[in-house]
Length: 450
Image (cartoon, rainbow, N blue to C red):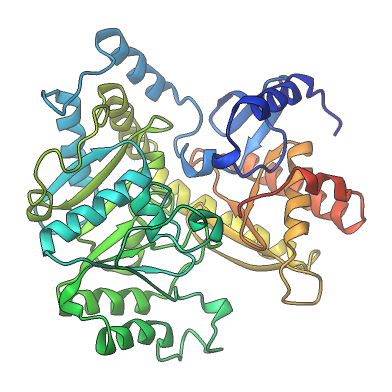
């Protein structure tokens, strides 16, 4: 288990001297150097199985040959020339492809950006412009990004809001349907959707629905712990939006591009969005985001309302086109569903030996595994931190979210053998934790998402 990590530790030390800590949630001193598929290599040459996919970015794995070839071929011709003034074919080809794969029985329009955060900012702008309304509904525990609009719509951490106000006005937060932690203590099969009633009550009493532009919704509440809402809740929310002319925005930044076994996670719920936000995995690690929306919505905002000089960059667009082809040709949607089901079943078997493993939930290869103090429903956050640290020491890249959710989001190209090896490492790490073989000193480094 002991590894040579002197180069990695030196990079961590140098990082601390020159980089702001504002953008990192540290888990362990892993300095990534290279990788292939679902394997990563650190600066010292150690090998790791990847259960993180760079926070859900590398759906096609690290350095897929087809993505590398597309990038290299494009850079030999042109790295990029702004489509803010000019025209370039790859941006058109990708927009045509996105209009094909993103569900919606309507004519679509695409707007590019650089990150999931700016995509959510754009969704707010387009929704307000198109509807002529100002209010936007979001959810408690939502994470939509860290640009000003996205951070204003997020309600998961005080650290995101503290000391940077005033934030974007007319944002309102309502309970997300977290059935295992239902504050009304209702059964998801029998409840009266009390969580949605709070939103409905606000529309009846103090928030005029004709002044609400959009609902921003995560089909899976990713950073809240990969929470999957009930289908009937999502369908009722969509119906409510239709009744009042409120746009339904699906934040697919983390869950889109095949992660859940479909192109968009919202497809699992049988409804369509008016605006879909894509990012992260869209270009297999290169900075690109896209809004795919009803054409009349996309046509409502005039230039330069959502213009970025580098958005729709030709290298990024070629990488995204290659990404889509890989997902289709290698049948990664099906593979995500099959491998995800296999992992969830294996975690279910592990619970016989490890009662600390609580609820397992997810769709495709977006899986959350709760970790509890034995014999209780009490979250064990320190346990998560220690286990993820020991997993890294043993050769598995695994992170956790919130108070106690292990985040299992590997590349879609993960093999069954790699999945098995990764879960074996997790089991061994839990054993080390139970035996007290992971010291408290690791908590000084392993802060996690907060």
